[in-house]
Image 1 (tube, rainbow, N blue to C red):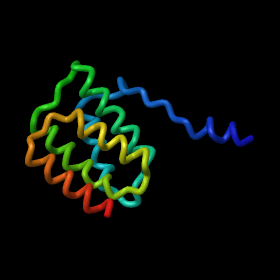
Image 2: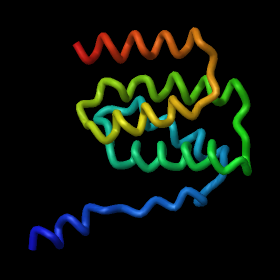
Image 3: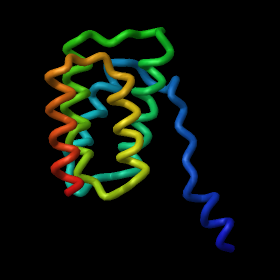
Image 4: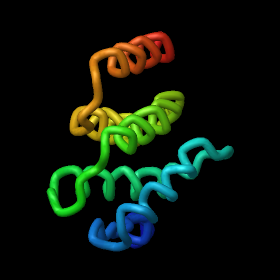
Length: 111
């Protein structure tokens, strides 16, 4: 029975689903309250896929918008979500000033 519940919790995310414009709209959920961790993880997965696929590149403004929208997720206590945020930030092409801001926020929220 426990195994069945665990399998029900697994969600397959098809990163090919949707387009760049709809994905950018979905990032609004990052600032919602209460935070839907599973939905945020799904969107972050799609962002990583988009960044690594090379099919549809993001503009520098879109990268900056995504970057600052996901910084809010550092406040989550969910370890899996925080790991995914780090992965997305690592893959996003942003400038050094923006990275410094996020690192400062991440360190301060961990203390």
